[in-house]
Amino acid sequence: MKEWNEQLFYTGTYAPRHERGIYVCALRVENGDLRIIGGVEGIERPSFLALHPDGTKLYAASETEEGELYAYQVHAQTGELHPLDRKGTEGAHTCYVSVTADGRYVLASNYSGGNAVVFPVTEAGGLGEMSGQVQHTGSGIRQDRQDAAHPHSIIPDPSGQYAMVCDLGLDQIVVYRLTEDGKLVTHREADLPPGSGPRHLVFHPSRPYAFVANELNNTVAVFSYNERNGELQLLQSLSTLPEGIIDVENTSADIRITPCGRYLYVSNRGHNSIVLYHVDLDSGKLETVEWVETSGSTPRNFNILSGYLVVANQDGNNIVSFAIHSEDGRLTRTGYVLEVPSPVCIEPVRQS
Image 1 (cartoon, one colour):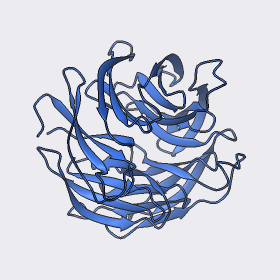
Image 2: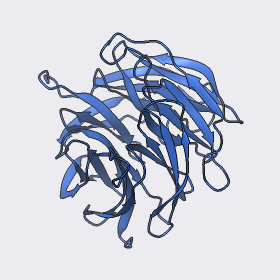
Image 3: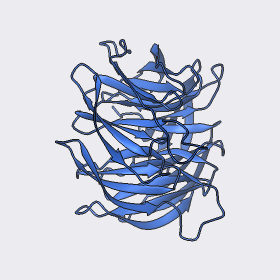
């Protein structure tokens, strides 16, 4: 049961189907303490989660060879999940799910399948028949990781007109026009340096910028974004690692920006850190500020909720909270750690 001073959130994991896969958790807003409230079984490897804009439905990607999406009804008071629907994604290893701002469509990307798909949301909150699908082909310079196309995320833009697919295998962000009837129409591409491996993208909350975490070359890229034309232009690229780090195998993972738009964070798996950048609101360019250890191994995902940054350490089997300083965005450990098997996604519950 949620208490008045707690922020609920969901945690996706790499659990097998017979074990609890999605956890309902709570963060105590006063001090960053964490606890488990409940959760659900019956979904295999729910590695990415997305809440519907109205807060009443949750969608989960099942990252398996037979990729699937699951839909759940959210209990308004407790955050408890009740299964609504499930659909195959016609692609292997569904690794990302998102929902358009108007709540009409659920988007997903299939890492090994090389495709991205669209499902309309039914009146009951379930998944209608697939309305759109696009297949990527090609490869990059890294034969160990870029032997084929690997769409790692699909993110609707703030206007709802376009969807951005970060393809790790192609070193491209492919921009699609999302039509009224839920189809993806190729619009343009934004190229990144060979071997970059774009993974996740986040838009600035109020300015015309987008930021991309590049998994393979451990960089963060800054783009200007023309919303009318759906056009990304590269402005800057910075390392996600401290200067001189050469003996650590690392891959950048998640990227988030604070609601004020002044602080951007990226996670490093291997270096096991969160890097903080200050955002210049006039130019969109970044200034590197600090690295903070995540108190666990392989910070695959994290999120920002109620003034805290909450990290899912996949191989550390824990979730850790950090207080965000409002004046400079720096992180301070709260000292609270929650033990959860293979946590890989943090998704806040909309508070009623």
